[in-house]
Image (cartoon, rainbow, N blue to C red):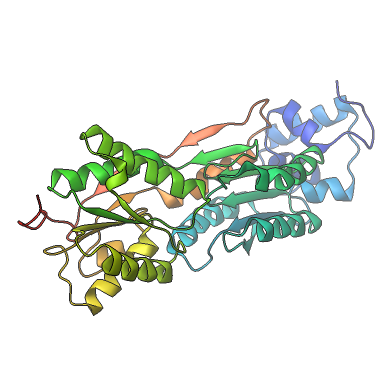
Length: 346
């Protein structure tokens, strides 16, 4: 049994009562948003355990500050804004505020943002975006998070990470496989990939899915022309320029996120390369503007707003003995940017 007195954490009370940290905090503080039955139960558990509240623990539990820290890779990327909208929606219902930090896909900057949020005594930290293929770069972050959790904080991530916490896991590899199979069914064999920043697990997983589609069709993944660039619209523009210069025979470009796909389409438009008659283009994510592009973008849909909701709901649940995983699923959305391979395609 947890030791009574000041060393007992609000997290222990929440876990024993079977409620979230935020609910336990509101119940003990007498705030609205908790039924009388639940509040009485939490107070009874608190008395039985001998819990003594302190301001720091209350902050960590979402009491005085009631703040969720959300770290995103790219604040102006619609992928992350849609995730943030889901987080904000759930936070509003729970009476929590959301503070958003921007890492720029830099693990060292992400660590700085993480430490800053912990210093601000937020109650929950969410990290949205890819993990890093080299798990060593996440070691310091994992240690910081472990200490934060021991103090009563809660953490969840969106993406494949090596942080040992609850996670919402996008269906990246299967989505990549669906993209590859779609283009192969249209007769494309000379395919290029605008692959995004090396070292990100999202890039590795989506690329692995594309490669698996080729293998399933008896083709070699080595036949893909893979160009790495920033995982942004400007990165897509740079990748498209390189593909057109170094691989002029390609008939399809897979961009591993929609931001890159938008950049690819802008270069093809500037070069007067017809899409999809001469070059098919596929994205990944299905951000809100994908259907409004000209041509509209074929892409893999991830439930981004739901992913934000799922992540915060995971963090609000009573602590689990093992990290929980929630898979997102995916849907291939076929629009105007893909068509049959040109007749010269062998």
